[in-house]
Image (cartoon, rainbow, N blue to C red; front, side, top):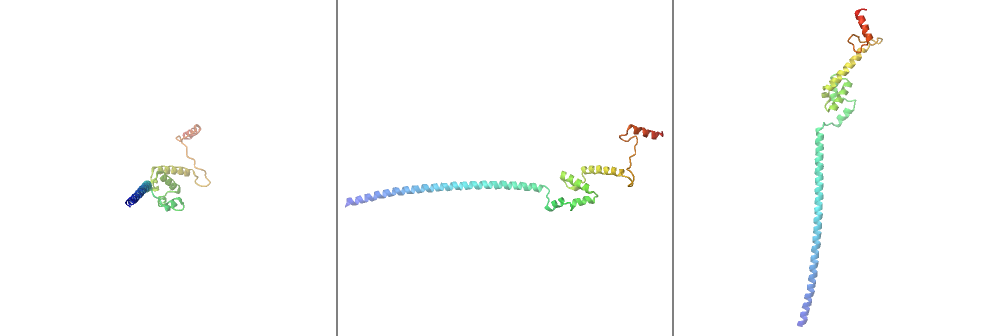
Length: 186
C-alpha cells in the first residue's frame, strides 16, 4: 500500500505541477495583456494631451489676434451707427456742419471742407482752417467776383466791358494804335 500511496502522491504532484505551469502561463499572459492595455491607454492619454495642447495654443493665438484687432479699432476714430447715418443722410446736419453754416459758409464750401477733412483724416472744423480750403475759397471768390462784374446793371444792358489801356494783356497792334490816337487826340 505504501507503493500505491506513493504512486498516488506522485501522480497528484505531477498533476499539480502541470496545473501550476498552466496557471503561471495564464497569469503571465494576463499580465502581458494588462501591460498592453495599460500602454495603449497611456498612448491614448498622450495623444489626448497633445490634442488639447494644440487646441490651447490655437486658442491663445486667436485671442492675441483678436486683442490686436480690438486695439487697432480703438485707435481709429469710432463712429456709432447714428453718426454714420447722419453723415450719409443729407437731410440731417451734423454738429460740425451746423457750425460751418453758422460761420457763413455756403453748401458748396461745406462740401469742399468735408472732402478735405476726409482726405486729411481730420475734423471738418480743422479742415475749414487749412491752407487748402483757404486757397480754394480765395480762388472761387475771385471767379465769382469776376462773373458779377461782367453782369449788366439791368436786364436790358449789355455786359460791362473792361477798359483797355496800354497795360492790358493781349493787346493787338491795331488796338494799340487806336489807344495811341485817342490819347494823343488825333
